[in-house]
Length: 138
Image 1 (spheres, helix red, strand yellow):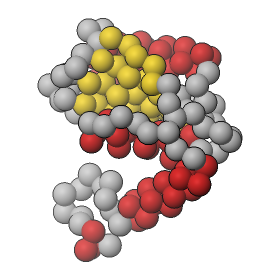
Image 2: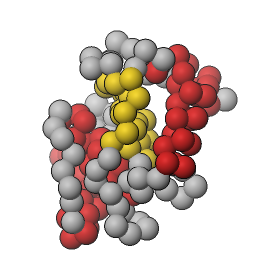
Image 3: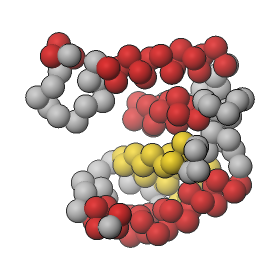
C-alpha cells in the first residue's frame, strides 16, 4: 500500500527538493532528496548508526527508484541532547534545506523555542498545502 501511495504522489525527480519525514520506533528523522545537487541527505538527531541503517533500508524499499542516482550523505549536526527534541530538530533540518542554508548547532533553550515556533506556525496554517487557506483565515 505504501509503495502505491508513493508511486501516485507528487514525488518527482523534476522537483528540486523532496522532504521525507520518517518515524522510527518513537523517534523522528528525515531525508532530503536534492535532485539539483544529486544528494540524498539523511538526518538522525540521535546520530546513531542503527537509525541511519534503518533510514537507508526505508529509502531503498519505498523510494529506491527516486534515490538510485543520488549520493547518500549523513547530516551530522545538530545532535539531540535529550529524548524528546528529535521532532523540532528534524523540522529545523527541513527548514534549512528549503532555505538553502547550513543547519546550525542549537542549545536546549533554542530547541524549546523551535518547538513553540513550529507549533505556532502550524496553528496558523503556514504548513497547510491547501492554497485556499491562509494565515488570515485561521
